[in-house]
Amino acid sequence: MIQVLGIANGACLIIFTSEKLTFFDDDGERTWADLILSILMIENILIIFRSLLASAIPDVPGWITEDIESNKNRVK
Image (tube, rainbow, N blue to C red; front, side):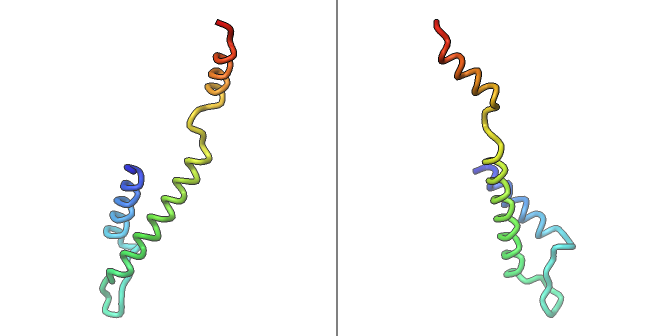
């Protein structure tokens, strides 16, 4: 949950402080709808990337899993 909140916070900071990612209407002003839409797009892309990366990297290394299995089969 902290990771998702961190991603949301980072997306908001990037959109509201970056000069290159600003969206303007006809009067040259930022529109709130475009800002909210860009925040949601960046946030969802980063959350999907984080989920894919978390599923690709195992929580326990292979050598630890092998050691646990060998300890289970060891005669005491």
